[in-house]
Length: 608
Image (cartoon, rainbow, N blue to C red):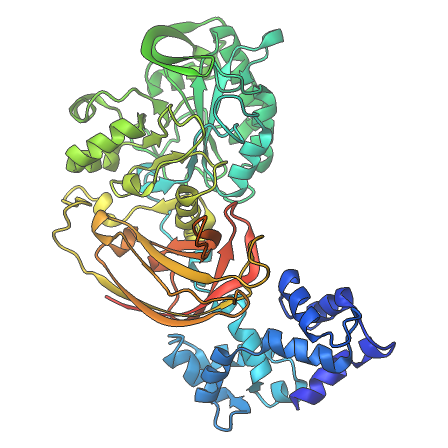
C-alpha cells in the first residue's frame, strides 16, 4: 500500500527519464521530507550508480528510504502496532498516553494526528496510521521537546514589574566590539525581534543640535538619536506586547536633552509613558497595565507628584544638577580613575521618567532606608558578583523590591559576556548582555526567554518574590528535587563541519545550569564517521534541587583530536518547559540560527 502511494506521488517526475540532484531535492520537498542539501548531495552521489549526475526512479526510492527510514522510529511503531504494518486509532491513543504523557482528550488528539500526518488516503479514512504517517508525526513540531503551552503567554502578568525577569541588552547599538566597531540600527532591530525589552542608548551631543548614539570616548561610529528611536518605534511591539524600557546613558547638554525629549514624544506619541497611571501612584505597575508602552530610564529631578503637577507646562530652558560618575576612555586604553562631575538634567527629559528612575546604588542598607519604589539600580558585574557571594540574602531582599540591572564590566572591550545565571539566581530583573556576541551566555539568555511566549517577561519563582522566603542559591535548605532522566537515542542529519568531509565523529553534551548545586554536565561516547544518523542510546540522570531556575542545554560537537572539538549546534530551554516522552530537539548555530532539519531524538522523563 505504501509502495503504491509512493509511486503515484513520483511517477510524473520521471516521465522524462532520470532526474538530477536539484530535481531530487525539489521532489523530496514536494513529498514534505525535510532534508539538508549537504546530506542529500552525499546520499545522491552514493546512489547514482552510473555516476552521471542523474538517477532512476528506483535509485530515488533508495534515497527516499535512507532519508525517511529510522530504525528507532520503526521500533516504537512495531511496539504499538498489532501487525507491524498499521497503527489502529486506539494503538495511537495507547502510545500517546503511555509514552507521550497525553492524559486529556487523547482520542480526539489521536484522530487529529491521523488527519494531519497520514499521507495515504485510504489509511487516513480508516482512522489508521502507516509507518510513513507515524514517522512524519514523530518528526513534527508537535513532538518537539519544548512544551506548546510555553509558546504563548501563560503566566500571571498582573504582578508589579519588579516580580519579573526582563530580557535586557547592553550597548544595544554595537554590532561587534566596544571600541572601534560599527554602531548599527540592526543592533536594536535584532534585539527587539529576539524579544528584548530593555535597550541601552548611549547619548552624546552631536553636530547641528542633533544628539547622537555611540560608545563615548571610543572610535565606534555614530547614529542619530532620532533615527534610533524611529527604528525602535517600528519594531518595539513586533514580538511582544509588553513594555519596552529605554535605558538612557545620558551625556548630553540640557539643550540636546530637550531635543531628545521632543524626539521621544513626537516619535512614540501616546505609547510613551509620561505620567503615573492612576491605579499605581506608589507601586510599580504590571506588564499587563503597561502593554504597548515605552518607558524612559534616566536620572530624574524631584518627585512623581511634582512631575504630574507640571504636566502640560513649558519646561524649556529648565534644568538641574545631578552628580554622576563617569569612566573616561582614552584611545583604547581604559583608565580606572573615575571623575565625578555634575550632569545638568533638562526638566523636559526628567519628566518623561516615571517608574524607571536611575539611582546610583550605594548599599543594601541605604536602599532599605531611602530607596523609592520607582528607583532602579545598575550594578556592574564585578561588584554584583562580590555582593552575591557575600550577602546573597540581602541581595535577594533588594531585588524583591527594586528593579536591578546588571551590566558587563568595562574591560570586556571585545563585547564578551558573563554567565547571566548567577544573577538570575538572586532575582536580578535586568541582566544585560551584549546581544551581538554569540556563545554560552547568549544561548542561556535565548533559552530562558523562550518561556512565556517569548514575551521578554518571565515571572520570577515565588521564593524570589515573597518576603518570608529565606532562599539562598548557594545554600539550599528545603527543596523538592526533580529527578530528570534523558535517554539520548539518536541524531538526525547533524550539521557538518568544513573539515569533516561529510562524516563527522559526533558526540553530545547535556548541561544543567541553575543554582550552584545543580550545575553539571554529562556527555555521550563519540560515534565515528556518522553525522547523518548517529545512534547513542545512552541514558543520563540529573537530580535538580531548584527546577524553577534550571536550564538544560544540549550541545553537539564534532571530535577533533588535534585542534579540539568543534561546535556543531546547541539547544537550551528551561527545565519546566520540557515535554516528557519521545521528543525532537531542534538545533541552532552559534549565531542562533535554526539548523533544521538537524536535531536530536530523545526520551525524557522527570518526576518530583
